Length: 187
Image 1 (cartoon, rainbow, N blue to C red):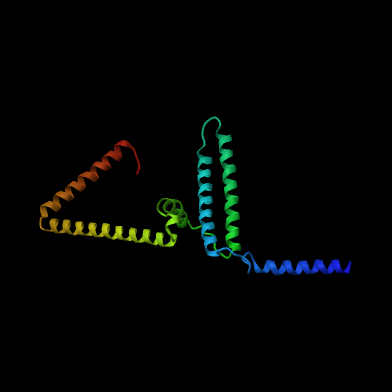
Image 2 (tube, rainbow, N blue to C red; image 1 turned 135 degrees about the horizontal axis):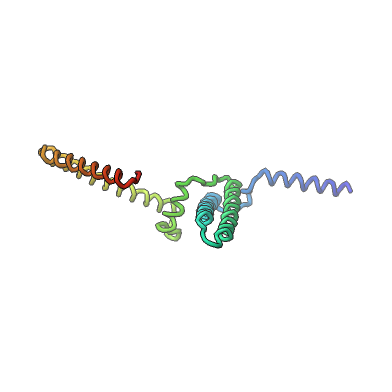
């Protein structure tokens, strides 16, 4: 019997040591960073699924609305459980579960449409997309700035044009006010 007790104590000691090592042990062969990245993408997908199911849950109408709504709620709860499990695994691997809505937007709107895993690093593809966005914003802002400067120069030399624009704006505002007063609509 003493050997059995000794064996159990050894097993418990080894188990405690393994637990202290965490999910990533010396024999873990996976790429932790890549695994966390993929899990965060899966987490974003699960969260979006929860949101979509909850949308349908609240929007269900008709004779069978309660039954249909309950079905959507059940699916939303299942997806939420999946998200919890994924977030827990990310944390176990030493990563941080990404619940940032901005990250969700990127993962659900940008990644599926414009990023291709087979074409290399997702980070580089996202960087390129970000640079394209900045270039488009610069071109757009510069165009509006030049247009505004040209309009200012054109209007600056003619007080009559400024008066006409002022009168036109005033008439438009009075017309809008009259319409709102007569129709009873509120902004």
